[in-house]
Length: 347
Ligand code: ATP
Image 1: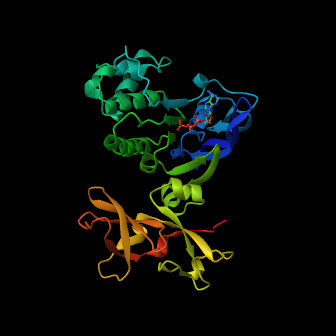
Image 2: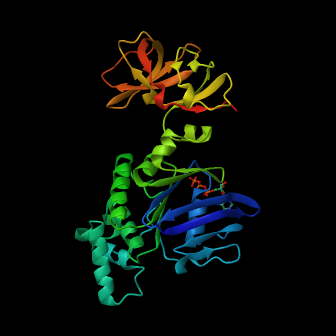
Image 3: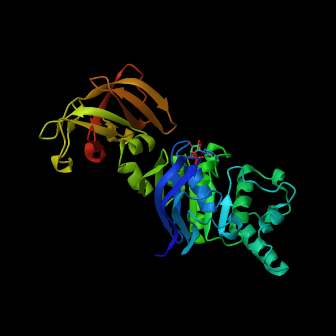
């Protein structure tokens, strides 16, 4: 598959300070990527560099085979075939939906423009509100207008900067999944910036996880969740706790946790490991002799998320059906399912 976007060793500096260092990342045509990471890690800076709002200190960016940014030359934002959807949607308040969508289509003839606007209105399901103004629309509808406006000039890549953060939680993941379907159907290459992993998981084929200006892992949502390559990734992605556990040569763990298959263990392991324990690695089992004290619990509707204490005091999570309703302070009978735990060397 052809590469639509390539970032090669990109460094962006504000004054002498690098906000992003040596970032390399690529997207194939039609692929949806995501830049994910905590506040201040450099996501927006990278997106702005791709859009042409920041110049590069080193490295280069190419789009559809053309270099659009090098340290010597930054092609102007309006000259790159890039569509943007901003956090606050940035719709023109004095233009109705139709004219907002048609704003970037000045190169088309009047007939072509009308046709393209209609296609976009149909694409995002807003034909019936075409004459309304932005303040007469719901947040979700405004977001679709922003999307239609960005897609109308057929950009080579669509950039989305925290596009769901102004919407309520329920709408967010629903819209993320809907927009993914729409982009996939139309083979749009897109890059999303978010600090919300649920949005990243719902939208992206591939996620670049950033920490302190560096890309620390590029993977599918599944791999990032199940095979985090670092303690940072393990901690940032998903719910779970990293615990320290003693281990012997046969793979037997301390704290009565059971055994790990020694074939799965790194060779240079000492006699302690760090284990990433996800809530689904510990199962409620009323027939089990192993019980752990309940420290706290939160009701999630279909589930309870229990916080349990191991014998040495370290805390681990356990997800049960919400019909398993045992008071804090009591013991929960559990079974450890260690097939999927992630093992880190303590160093
Ligand atoms: P958030 O999720 O909070 O938006 P982010 O991951 O998008 O964060 P950036 O906005 O890219 O992070 O910022 C990366 C770093 O660059 C931060 O340390 C920030 O303070 C710094 N920075 C961002 N913009 C500027 C600027 N115009 N001048 C100087 N420093 C900046």
